[in-house]
Image (tube, rainbow, N blue to C red; front, side, top):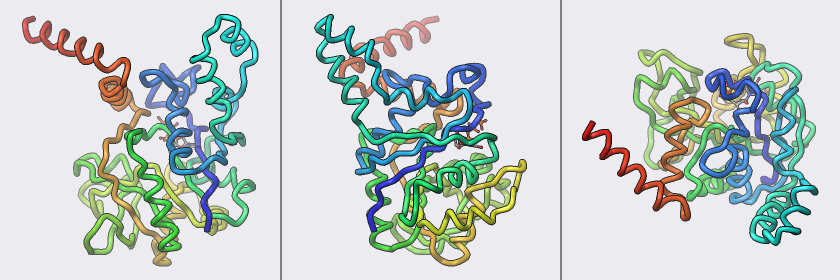
Length: 292
Ligand code: UTP
């Protein structure tokens, strides 16, 4: 079964990132040299997905404008003979087939996914949360899609987090076994660490069977009055058709201030052009602080 469509939910309020996200959507905040939403789209394209539906809300329309042509800018770059930049801008416009749907009210992640249902039809689909940044040098999503194809079972990405942090995530109850793919028996959203079934946290990458849309239809609002995607995943787990795949690479929650800074530092450190000077600068300020 082909997986060629993805939903990027980007209609949230971004309260953990205020005041930066008051006017500028957090998905348009820049990490090193590109906005967070571009990392998300590039990750999908790397995994072979070019049909991308971004769920936005009123005031966040600019999130999709990042991928549309800006004729004035392109003409100016052409006239100034800035061919490399022009090429980069044209490449961005043609990166994928990107369109948006509006979530009128922030009724939760499950609701945001459901709002995009007309674009899914009867096919499996990916959900990617853009503020969870995964190492751009990896292609974990392609591995998840391969697992979906070989098991015909919905797949969610998990990462082991420090025990006290599990209360910020969904926690899975995995079937005992070996290897990085495991069947999920149950899921709990943001559990108290004392009752969390494991420290394996759900991290914002999902390859889902189309039945998830029907399940979402009947999910009742849960904590905070929101329709939770976790509640639909819990139904899959109960039916025995949910697999978790463990991610072992680098990951940053760029929707928090500290995670954003860590992503910026790590990716600037690795950047082919900026990296060497940035590393030298880090050494310099470290020396200043140790002598202070
Ligand atoms: P988050 O809770 O991480 O993002 O939701 P948020 O709501 O924007 O941020 P905080 O918690 O207030 O700081 C996970 C993802 O789901 C989307 C968000 O945009 C984010 O990508 N989302 C969440 C929606 O699209 N709609 C919603 O109603 C809720």
